Image (cartoon, rainbow, N blue to C red; front, side, top):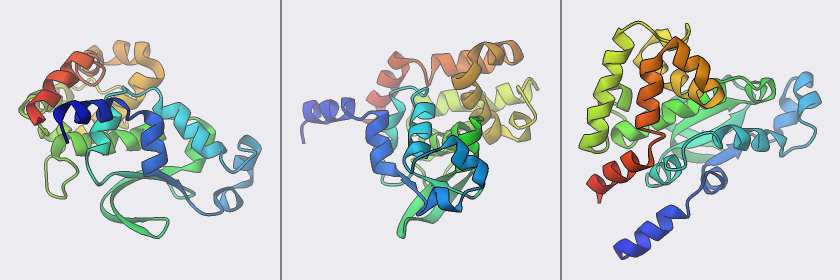
Length: 218
């Protein structure tokens, strides 16, 4: 495969491409969900549509990065939202690294779906989703440039301006919660923690940064 073809293919990978390839719903999801969820989601595909609306807030460069690794899935379920690194099962398929997204969180329209997908992004930007590697928020990086900015996250976390109790739980949660809040209410994040808002703007939401960092991988 030529470099030109590789680049062209990468550009074609969108949020919807990733959604169709890497996101699955639990069988009989709405039948198993609490009744109040069915008052929000009136047809079987509605939770997937809700997740699609959430991930559309994330930067477009995230999707080809995630698709470049064989691991990293999302499973919409009646269980609580959490990121489970390592071996997992998605609709009877054995996979690696699963972000479980609660259908209740989607119906409630809270930040938890984006938070757990933030963990998935953190893990894969840090070490490609490897079991023992450092996540981006721990100073890891799939390229030296990502490792350089990843190392800054621990310093920002240590300043003590984490925007809420969840973000204060640890540097991984600091990254994931800040990313979710950037998507949902960037101005409020900027008030609470302007340094992490600036960091996100200059890295994940910066196309030129992605191009430069991607160049190191090729």
